Image (cartoon, rainbow, N blue to C red; front, side):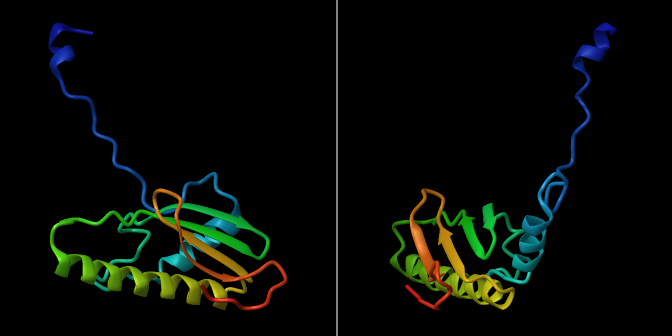
Length: 128
């Protein structure tokens, strides 16, 4: 490598959009289903917006992990809007996964707090 080569900036890598290639087919399918859930504030789906950061699929059970960090904590009006947006997103996640046939759905935030759940192990509907 020449002396000038040291100062050249490395080629930038563009992150790939969408599910990783090594994911199981059932996880990829759920990620694609979750693309139909839009953030009502921005109109962008939760996958492309980066709100979905984890997912576990086991049979009829889905655990969804979301990054829902709030901005401007001192603004009470902003907090109210954020809570309403979050409720809408949670409701839409439960709806689309129920339509896909899941009988147990759990949605968690970035610190592992259960935000919403639907159903139980025997398949009967139960909304938190």
